[in-house]
Length: 338
Image 1 (cartoon, rainbow, N blue to C red):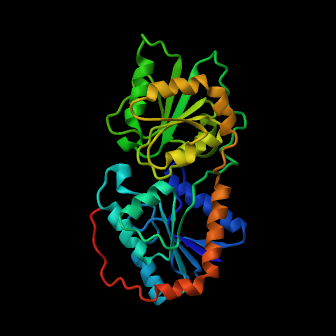
Image 2 (image 1 turned 90 degrees about the vertical axis):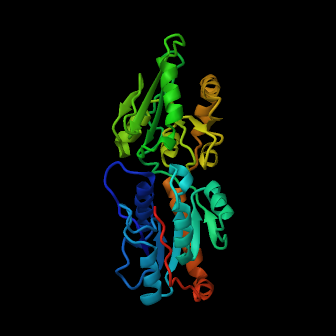
Image 3 (image 1 turned 90 degrees about the horizontal axis):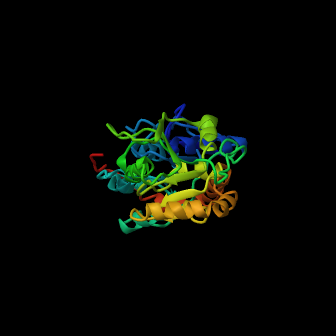
């Protein structure tokens, strides 16, 4: 197959969507398929729409470009739309409407969690030809080899990392943890490290702030710690907690978005009002969750295999899919201010 992925690959630290493209592309090539990032060729079998907005920095083509391609160049290419974004995540407006509109060119849809699938179903998404494929990271890089194990005597080290600096990435909880370890009366022997970008004018009191990292450098830094914390709100998927879990760190995760689907059983879930209590519970049960997280199943190979299987299934049903699409008309493109 020839598969076109609608995103550019950006070198160095970037968001989880970039890692998804890298991991999927590498897997598809390994399995003998051709991968491009444009619509220049006239023999594309699968078009994967990952960023429908062609103006986005990482986008290599948008949904209008796809529509023109299947109307004018090759009408039997199958269009798959991967949805991993929503207004709720960054307090934006019109992203959901834009995605639902762009989805009209898709023959099939992949959601990165059941949470985001249900969100769009409530807003009018047509569920025919859709499925959930959970994300995963590269286990050759993110694995528990040489990780630091907490001995209950030395300082407990907690870590998180984010590329985005939106407040919803969890900064209310990260600030709460920073305040806890800064409180001399509590005398908590805990170190907290934040790797990545922070909101403008945001400062920690006692926690460590490191620049964004990626690849093995990031993995090695994560493995220097004992617990992975994510307080990201309305996160459809996210790669950060996956990378932490794959490095063998029990996860302390907030009950929001798709996080429970990825983290349940491999750490402790908390609500915004009981963070300290759940942190203490995880500390008391560290060994249990350390053993559990060693069985963490999400990795990029599993994820990519599921995508390839889905692509092949769609190709096998191409005739029926194209028949359903024949009346597709996008004569008007509604404009949304994103």
